[in-house]
Length: 457
Image 1 (cartoon, rainbow, N blue to C red):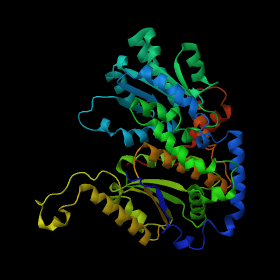
Image 2: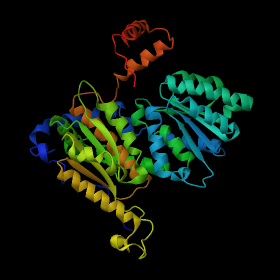
Image 3: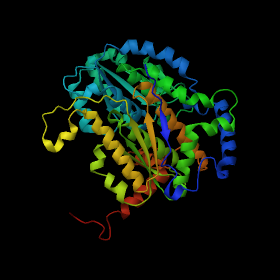
Image 4: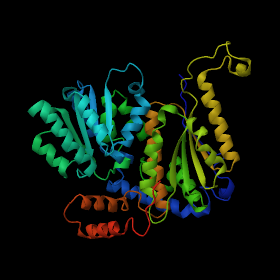
């Protein structure tokens, strides 16, 4: 069997305003050595667990017994938001499309990733608690949206099942601390840990994403194998700068940093693998929450081929010249049905071709149109679109994000700006310990809508 390789095509990457730059330029020689040393140090300190996956052995031992306990349930209701949900949804759409197709009878994954009372009410009104396992995901155990959902769903289970409700809950949270860890201990609930130093947007290949993936029957170990394969060159003995310099994540990081330096402040993630369309949303959180700091970073823009050829692609092609593009393709996808001869003469060129040939042709046309219109572009050509390939891509994206943050001299792990909104919301709801936020809210509301600011439409 032919083994198809995953490759990056750089032909049109360093073009237009990036023509004078390359990853090998003297500008990055010193940074490469410093980044290699930092990477080695953080790996030794255990602060990059997404990369060397020190939790992998324990996860491969602990996940199957939990899976066996919940295998008989028809529905999984996942309570989580942001990184606790985006990866699971991307994997669901990519590798379990059956749920969105006619005639599916189970299993089902329902992801509650927003404050949506109508949807949560509908689920609790229609789903049978006896057939449902509820998975609650929060690293800190203090995510207000997730905890609020849990309090309501827990009551729903208890009303129907009594004390048996405990067999219908799995908590995925910090191994030692937080409200969910206390709940797991107090109630004797099944639980799986979120490893230390593994933030939500980097957690898809831990129990956070792999428990729902395994419930749906995906090759979750293949996802781990793929991520491990892309990381392997960075983990083999003492890391030399030459090893890092050869890794595609380094080149992508240099390219991304230079895009920003040259005024390209938007990065399109254009997927021409239809079932991988939700990878764009997953990548957007990873990129934006990691790099949008101190006035730096670039705005990720997820796009779907061919759907967005008929919408936002006009802006990509003829709008401001501020966009770079990661272009995702796979030539080995199923091509579907063959066109027959019974088509009008106007469309006769389709005869003898397959439906999937149209996707390949449109992808090629869009890729050429983007580069012709001065959009620096890296084509990520996947040799296959299975779970192992997805693990490789996700691992590559995470490593690229970390390295890009270091080249921007920012911390790609934290997310300080989003905390203010959380504190203000908690203050509005009456949480204690937020007097400063309470005063700021009062001033904000006192000003809002005054002086003719309101306009009906």
